[in-house]
Amino acid sequence: MSSFLKPALKYLLIVMCTLAAGLSVWLLSDKAQEKPEAKSITTPIDSKNEAGRYLQQASEDFFYHEFDKAIESYGKAIIAFEKDNQLEKAAKVYESIGDLYKFRTRIKEAEAQYTLAMQYHQKINNPLGEARAMKRAGDLFLERGEHVSAKDWYAKATLLVQDLPPHPTQAVLFESMGRICWKTEKNIPDAIRWYTLARDSFSALKNQMGYDHMTAVLNKLRGLEKLKPH
Image (cartoon, rainbow, N blue to C red; front, side):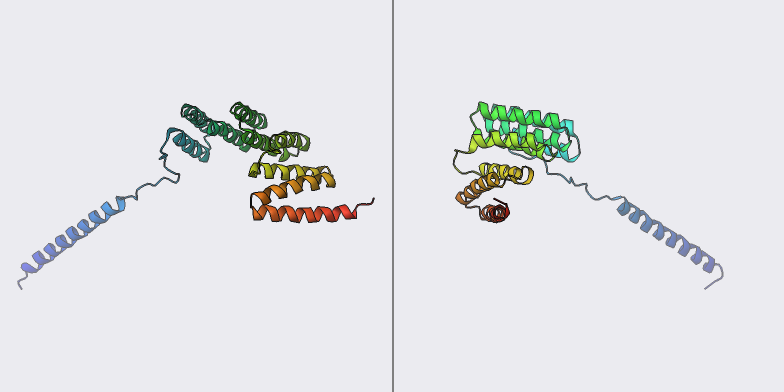
């Protein structure tokens, strides 16, 4: 091969390699710019009804700690439920607003919302719903160590449900009264009475776990009763 051709071939080879390298870098750069499609980490707002969509929105707002927006969404859900004449569900949303305030440790606002729920349940003649809202109010104070206020709410609630057919709300209220009598007041006879009512409710509901737990508590309480001096 002539001495003239050798430098020319060498130059051509360098140009071809450079073009090839440039092409591969260009292709790689396009792939590097591709980003995976963003996916939402929350449930899509896809409920079939208006109220359900507002409730889903409230859950998403709560997840992102947009509490004021969550309350606004709950309010819209109440209006939508009322429009569809689903008044029991509307009343229950007030309980959810109370739970939100409870989470934020805004106790007065939480109690106010639970009270609104009670009033709404009473208005539509739903004693179980009213009692459930009262229990939430009682739990609110119990968790703060305010046992007198807690018992007051539990006592009002049990009056509403004690003569009703067995129901989970009834059973847990009887249990709550028993726990207050035992743990706070050290009143074993009253605790036994309430836990017995709770056990019987769980039994009627065929709730084996609840029945077994109440039975175990009653056995312990009766053992404590025997140890008391007479």
